[in-house]
Image (cartoon, rainbow, N blue to C red; front, side):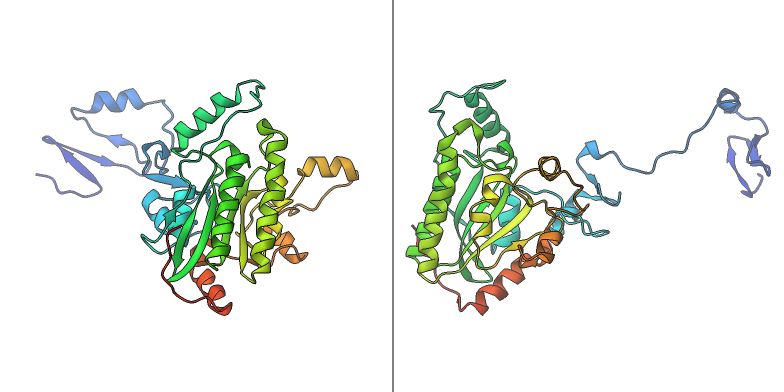
Length: 318
Protein backbone atom coordinates (compact mmCIF):
# COMPACT_ATOMS: atom_id res chain seq x y z
CA UNK A 1 0.00 0.00 0.00
CA UNK A 2 1.46 3.40 -0.89
CA UNK A 3 2.75 5.60 1.88
CA UNK A 4 1.09 8.80 3.09
CA UNK A 5 3.45 11.35 1.51
CA UNK A 6 2.14 14.63 0.19
CA UNK A 7 -1.38 13.33 -0.04
CA UNK A 8 -3.80 10.75 1.25
CA UNK A 9 -5.30 7.35 0.54
CA UNK A 10 -8.86 6.80 -0.62
CA UNK A 11 -10.04 3.24 -1.14
CA UNK A 12 -7.40 1.41 -3.17
CA UNK A 13 -6.18 4.40 -5.12
CA UNK A 14 -3.62 7.03 -4.10
CA UNK A 15 -3.97 10.71 -4.88
CA UNK A 16 -1.24 13.30 -4.61
CA UNK A 17 -1.01 17.05 -5.01
CA UNK A 18 1.40 18.63 -7.47
CA UNK A 19 3.00 22.04 -7.12
CA UNK A 20 -0.21 23.71 -8.21
CA UNK A 21 -2.17 21.94 -5.46
CA UNK A 22 -4.39 20.32 -8.09
CA UNK A 23 -5.78 16.87 -7.43
CA UNK A 24 -4.29 14.24 -9.78
CA UNK A 25 -5.08 10.60 -10.31
CA UNK A 26 -8.39 8.88 -10.42
CA UNK A 27 -10.61 7.80 -7.59
CA UNK A 28 -14.22 7.38 -6.64
CA UNK A 29 -14.27 11.12 -5.92
CA UNK A 30 -13.18 12.27 -9.38
CA UNK A 31 -16.75 13.21 -10.13
CA UNK A 32 -16.68 15.74 -7.29
CA UNK A 33 -13.32 17.07 -8.46
CA UNK A 34 -14.67 17.52 -11.97
CA UNK A 35 -17.63 19.38 -10.61
CA UNK A 36 -15.27 21.86 -8.94
CA UNK A 37 -13.21 22.56 -12.05
CA UNK A 38 -13.66 26.11 -13.22
CA UNK A 39 -15.54 27.08 -10.09
CA UNK A 40 -14.35 29.72 -7.67
CA UNK A 41 -13.71 28.29 -4.23
CA UNK A 42 -14.09 31.13 -1.73
CA UNK A 43 -12.22 31.36 1.52
CA UNK A 44 -14.07 29.59 4.28
CA UNK A 45 -14.94 32.11 6.95
CA UNK A 46 -13.43 31.35 10.32
CA UNK A 47 -15.90 33.60 12.06
CA UNK A 48 -18.49 31.70 14.08
CA UNK A 49 -22.18 32.30 13.73
CA UNK A 50 -23.24 34.81 16.40
CA UNK A 51 -26.81 33.67 15.93
CA UNK A 52 -26.13 30.42 17.73
CA UNK A 53 -25.93 32.31 21.03
CA UNK A 54 -22.44 31.01 21.84
CA UNK A 55 -20.28 33.74 20.36
CA UNK A 56 -20.02 37.51 20.39
CA UNK A 57 -18.11 39.80 18.03
CA UNK A 58 -16.77 43.04 19.43
CA UNK A 59 -18.07 45.98 17.37
CA UNK A 60 -14.93 47.96 18.21
CA UNK A 61 -12.04 45.59 17.36
CA UNK A 62 -13.82 42.64 15.72
CA UNK A 63 -12.52 40.07 18.18
CA UNK A 64 -14.79 37.03 18.49
CA UNK A 65 -15.09 35.38 21.89
CA UNK A 66 -17.28 32.86 23.66
CA UNK A 67 -20.26 34.68 25.12
CA UNK A 68 -19.72 33.03 28.51
CA UNK A 69 -16.11 34.28 28.56
CA UNK A 70 -17.30 37.79 27.70
CA UNK A 71 -19.85 37.74 30.53
CA UNK A 72 -17.21 36.41 32.92
CA UNK A 73 -15.25 39.59 32.16
CA UNK A 74 -18.25 41.83 32.97
CA UNK A 75 -19.08 42.08 29.24
CA UNK A 76 -15.88 44.03 28.58
CA UNK A 77 -13.83 43.07 25.51
CA UNK A 78 -10.49 41.65 26.63
CA UNK A 79 -8.89 42.80 23.37
CA UNK A 80 -9.73 46.50 23.28
CA UNK A 81 -11.66 47.25 26.49
CA UNK A 82 -14.96 47.98 24.72
CA UNK A 83 -17.84 48.01 27.20
CA UNK A 84 -20.83 46.12 25.85
CA UNK A 85 -24.23 47.31 27.04
CA UNK A 86 -25.59 45.25 29.91
CA UNK A 87 -29.01 45.11 31.55
CA UNK A 88 -29.95 45.98 35.12
CA UNK A 89 -29.62 42.41 36.40
CA UNK A 90 -26.10 42.05 35.00
CA UNK A 91 -25.19 45.46 36.38
CA UNK A 92 -26.28 44.45 39.88
CA UNK A 93 -24.14 41.30 39.62
CA UNK A 94 -21.13 43.46 38.74
CA UNK A 95 -21.65 45.85 41.67
CA UNK A 96 -23.21 43.95 44.57
CA UNK A 97 -21.79 41.14 46.66
CA UNK A 98 -23.38 37.84 45.59
CA UNK A 99 -26.83 37.36 47.10
CA UNK A 100 -26.84 40.69 48.94
CA UNK A 101 -29.26 42.72 46.79
CA UNK A 102 -32.70 43.38 48.32
CA UNK A 103 -35.11 44.94 45.85
CA UNK A 104 -37.76 47.48 46.91
CA UNK A 105 -40.97 48.63 45.22
CA UNK A 106 -40.80 45.97 42.51
CA UNK A 107 -44.58 46.05 42.02
CA UNK A 108 -44.84 49.76 41.19
CA UNK A 109 -46.15 49.91 37.62
CA UNK A 110 -46.64 52.90 35.29
CA UNK A 111 -50.06 54.20 34.24
CA UNK A 112 -51.21 56.16 31.22
CA UNK A 113 -53.08 59.14 32.73
CA UNK A 114 -52.71 61.24 29.55
CA UNK A 115 -53.86 58.39 27.28
CA UNK A 116 -50.94 59.38 25.10
CA UNK A 117 -50.66 58.14 21.54
CA UNK A 118 -48.18 58.95 18.80
CA UNK A 119 -47.70 56.30 16.14
CA UNK A 120 -48.66 53.80 18.81
CA UNK A 121 -50.46 53.99 22.12
CA UNK A 122 -48.27 54.51 25.19
CA UNK A 123 -50.09 51.66 26.93
CA UNK A 124 -49.05 49.31 24.12
CA UNK A 125 -45.43 50.44 24.37
CA UNK A 126 -45.47 49.76 28.11
CA UNK A 127 -46.86 46.26 27.68
CA UNK A 128 -44.31 45.49 25.00
CA UNK A 129 -41.37 46.68 27.12
CA UNK A 130 -42.63 44.81 30.17
CA UNK A 131 -42.93 41.59 28.17
CA UNK A 132 -39.49 42.00 26.60
CA UNK A 133 -37.60 42.87 29.79
CA UNK A 134 -39.56 41.26 32.61
CA UNK A 135 -39.50 44.62 34.41
CA UNK A 136 -42.38 46.84 35.51
CA UNK A 137 -40.46 49.97 34.48
CA UNK A 138 -37.00 51.20 33.59
CA UNK A 139 -35.25 51.10 36.98
CA UNK A 140 -34.43 48.51 39.64
CA UNK A 141 -33.74 49.76 43.18
CA UNK A 142 -32.79 48.32 46.55
CA UNK A 143 -30.10 47.84 49.17
CA UNK A 144 -26.98 45.74 48.72
CA UNK A 145 -23.46 45.25 50.03
CA UNK A 146 -20.20 46.06 48.29
CA UNK A 147 -17.38 44.10 49.92
CA UNK A 148 -19.57 44.00 53.02
CA UNK A 149 -20.37 47.73 53.04
CA UNK A 150 -24.04 48.74 52.86
CA UNK A 151 -25.11 50.67 49.77
CA UNK A 152 -28.41 51.96 48.36
CA UNK A 153 -28.42 51.12 44.66
CA UNK A 154 -30.65 52.18 41.76
CA UNK A 155 -29.92 50.83 38.27
CA UNK A 156 -31.63 52.24 35.19
CA UNK A 157 -32.28 49.78 32.36
CA UNK A 158 -31.97 51.14 28.82
CA UNK A 159 -33.93 48.21 27.39
CA UNK A 160 -37.14 49.64 28.85
CA UNK A 161 -38.16 52.44 26.48
CA UNK A 162 -34.60 53.72 26.24
CA UNK A 163 -34.29 54.04 30.02
CA UNK A 164 -36.63 57.03 29.87
CA UNK A 165 -37.65 58.61 33.16
CA UNK A 166 -41.37 58.42 33.85
CA UNK A 167 -43.35 58.77 37.05
CA UNK A 168 -42.56 55.29 38.36
CA UNK A 169 -38.84 55.62 37.64
CA UNK A 170 -38.81 58.92 39.52
CA UNK A 171 -40.87 57.53 42.40
CA UNK A 172 -38.69 54.45 42.85
CA UNK A 173 -35.49 56.48 42.84
CA UNK A 174 -36.96 59.03 45.26
CA UNK A 175 -38.14 56.33 47.67
CA UNK A 176 -34.72 54.72 47.57
CA UNK A 177 -33.00 58.02 48.38
CA UNK A 178 -35.35 58.60 51.30
CA UNK A 179 -34.68 55.09 52.65
CA UNK A 180 -30.93 55.64 52.26
CA UNK A 181 -31.18 58.93 54.15
CA UNK A 182 -33.21 57.34 56.95
CA UNK A 183 -30.73 54.48 57.34
CA UNK A 184 -27.67 56.70 56.77
CA UNK A 185 -26.47 54.73 53.76
CA UNK A 186 -24.37 55.93 50.83
CA UNK A 187 -26.16 55.98 47.49
CA UNK A 188 -25.23 54.95 43.95
CA UNK A 189 -27.47 55.57 40.93
CA UNK A 190 -26.41 53.90 37.67
CA UNK A 191 -27.65 56.15 34.87
CA UNK A 192 -28.53 54.81 31.42
CA UNK A 193 -31.24 56.93 29.88
CA UNK A 194 -32.40 58.94 26.91
CA UNK A 195 -33.98 61.44 29.30
CA UNK A 196 -37.54 62.29 30.28
CA UNK A 197 -40.40 60.12 28.99
CA UNK A 198 -42.34 62.30 26.57
CA UNK A 199 -45.44 60.09 26.79
CA UNK A 200 -45.97 61.33 30.36
CA UNK A 201 -45.41 65.00 29.60
CA UNK A 202 -45.08 67.27 32.63
CA UNK A 203 -45.53 64.30 34.98
CA UNK A 204 -42.17 63.04 33.73
CA UNK A 205 -40.43 66.41 34.00
CA UNK A 206 -41.61 66.76 37.60
CA UNK A 207 -39.46 63.77 38.55
CA UNK A 208 -36.30 65.81 37.97
CA UNK A 209 -37.21 68.23 40.77
CA UNK A 210 -38.54 65.48 43.05
CA UNK A 211 -35.35 63.41 42.83
CA UNK A 212 -33.14 66.48 43.16
CA UNK A 213 -35.01 67.53 46.31
CA UNK A 214 -34.53 64.09 47.87
CA UNK A 215 -30.82 64.25 47.02
CA UNK A 216 -30.52 67.63 48.72
CA UNK A 217 -31.93 66.18 51.94
CA UNK A 218 -29.48 63.28 51.57
CA UNK A 219 -26.65 65.80 51.24
CA UNK A 220 -27.83 67.79 54.26
CA UNK A 221 -27.55 64.55 56.26
CA UNK A 222 -23.86 64.51 55.21
CA UNK A 223 -24.28 61.25 53.29
CA UNK A 224 -22.44 60.22 50.15
CA UNK A 225 -24.11 60.16 46.72
CA UNK A 226 -22.40 58.91 43.56
CA UNK A 227 -23.92 58.69 40.08
CA UNK A 228 -22.35 56.26 37.60
CA UNK A 229 -22.82 57.55 34.06
CA UNK A 230 -23.02 54.75 31.51
CA UNK A 231 -23.72 54.70 27.79
CA UNK A 232 -25.89 56.66 27.12
CA UNK A 233 -26.78 59.26 29.76
CA UNK A 234 -28.64 62.15 28.16
CA UNK A 235 -31.52 64.61 28.39
CA UNK A 236 -33.33 65.29 31.64
CA UNK A 237 -31.35 62.69 33.57
CA UNK A 238 -28.12 64.54 32.76
CA UNK A 239 -29.83 67.83 33.61
CA UNK A 240 -30.74 66.60 37.10
CA UNK A 241 -29.51 63.79 39.33
CA UNK A 242 -26.75 62.51 37.01
CA UNK A 243 -24.71 65.66 37.68
CA UNK A 244 -25.48 66.19 41.37
CA UNK A 245 -23.07 63.66 42.84
CA UNK A 246 -20.37 64.23 45.43
CA UNK A 247 -18.22 62.06 43.18
CA UNK A 248 -19.29 61.57 39.55
CA UNK A 249 -18.17 58.29 38.02
CA UNK A 250 -18.39 57.23 34.38
CA UNK A 251 -17.67 54.18 32.24
CA UNK A 252 -15.09 54.46 29.44
CA UNK A 253 -16.35 56.08 26.22
CA UNK A 254 -19.89 56.53 27.54
CA UNK A 255 -22.02 59.05 25.66
CA UNK A 256 -22.97 61.80 28.14
CA UNK A 257 -24.81 64.99 27.28
CA UNK A 258 -28.04 66.95 27.29
CA UNK A 259 -28.95 67.89 23.73
CA UNK A 260 -27.89 65.83 20.74
CA UNK A 261 -24.74 66.55 18.81
CA UNK A 262 -26.58 67.65 15.66
CA UNK A 263 -28.79 70.07 17.60
CA UNK A 264 -25.75 71.69 19.22
CA UNK A 265 -23.85 71.99 15.94
CA UNK A 266 -26.83 73.56 14.18
CA UNK A 267 -27.37 75.96 17.07
CA UNK A 268 -23.73 77.03 17.39
CA UNK A 269 -23.08 76.71 13.63
CA UNK A 270 -19.73 75.11 14.21
CA UNK A 271 -18.21 71.64 14.10
CA UNK A 272 -17.77 69.88 17.44
CA UNK A 273 -14.72 67.76 18.35
CA UNK A 274 -14.96 64.07 17.45
CA UNK A 275 -14.81 63.02 21.10
CA UNK A 276 -17.38 65.59 22.23
CA UNK A 277 -19.89 64.24 24.81
CA UNK A 278 -17.71 61.25 25.69
CA UNK A 279 -16.79 60.38 29.26
CA UNK A 280 -13.15 61.20 28.50
CA UNK A 281 -13.99 64.64 27.11
CA UNK A 282 -16.15 65.49 30.11
CA UNK A 283 -13.49 64.30 32.54
CA UNK A 284 -10.90 66.50 30.85
CA UNK A 285 -13.26 69.48 31.15
CA UNK A 286 -14.20 68.91 34.78
CA UNK A 287 -17.71 67.46 34.49
CA UNK A 288 -16.72 63.90 35.43
CA UNK A 289 -14.41 63.07 38.32
CA UNK A 290 -13.16 59.62 37.40
CA UNK A 291 -13.62 56.99 34.69
CA UNK A 292 -13.86 53.47 36.09
CA UNK A 293 -13.59 50.35 33.92
CA UNK A 294 -16.42 47.96 34.71
CA UNK A 295 -14.06 45.18 35.74
CA UNK A 296 -12.70 47.45 38.49
CA UNK A 297 -16.02 48.93 39.58
CA UNK A 298 -16.77 46.90 42.71
CA UNK A 299 -13.28 47.28 44.17
CA UNK A 300 -13.24 51.00 43.32
CA UNK A 301 -16.61 51.56 44.98
CA UNK A 302 -15.48 49.70 48.09
CA UNK A 303 -12.32 51.82 48.29
CA UNK A 304 -14.27 55.06 47.92
CA UNK A 305 -16.81 53.97 50.54
CA UNK A 306 -14.04 53.17 53.03
CA UNK A 307 -12.40 56.53 52.37
CA UNK A 308 -15.69 58.17 53.32
CA UNK A 309 -15.89 56.26 56.59
CA UNK A 310 -18.47 53.70 55.51
CA UNK A 311 -18.10 50.39 57.32
CA UNK A 312 -19.57 46.93 56.92
CA UNK A 313 -22.97 46.69 58.55
CA UNK A 314 -26.19 44.77 58.66
CA UNK A 315 -28.87 46.14 56.35
CA UNK A 316 -32.28 46.66 57.87
CA UNK A 317 -35.23 45.82 55.66
CA UNK A 318 -37.28 48.82 54.60
